[in-house]
Length: 272
Image 1: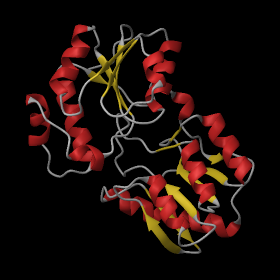
Image 2 (image 1 turned 45 degrees about the horizontal axis):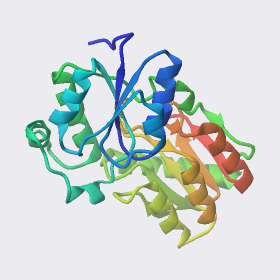
Image 3 (image 1 turned 180 degrees about the vertical axis):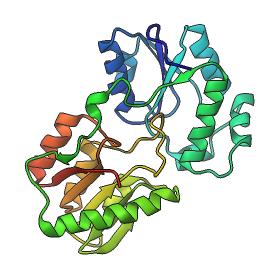
Image 4 (image 1 turned 90 degrees about the horizontal axis):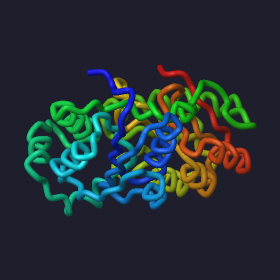
């Protein structure tokens, strides 16, 4: 089913600035935005969205009816949901239980793939996350003023290989390395907490973040933002490397300026 070219779009919003960036991008294309806040959405989203509703995480049937009542046919998933914070508080309705019944494990990829399938079976088109924010996609190359040194470049290559293996197991999507040693691996705590943990062990770490081997562009694209760079600077990190064409740079201009100010090399490397 192809995405409709007109009518309102729906945004299922979690934490972070990505739902706001998508809503603003949709407005630039003349589309109305119906937002459903399911987990700790950015307060700015209430002002940006044309229609803003809050639905409890797990109440998928209520989300579907909210969108249907407002003429939404196209949906974008955006923002993070803290699984540890939400796990004890989620009450599933009938449609949410249907998603749960299809899970083979509780990894992000499995949960989101099942959610997308149910939304499509309910008659919606789930659009790629970058559909309304293509300017956020990282192009290959050095993104800021400082290029990685030769030693840092070797760590980027090494870290990308380790991160790809970790992502293939759906453990996390980022690692911190230093002089050919793995310092920290991202798991359920997220990239920012992993960076802080790496900083407790060493200064000058190279952080590499990648997509899954078969990354679905409709959900959970790797993303970094000013908060990531601020955390890396506080941890004494030296490099932030992301996967080109498969990573979103949130608040792109601010992100690059922060990296430059902190002397951090910001680089996007080709997939594989």
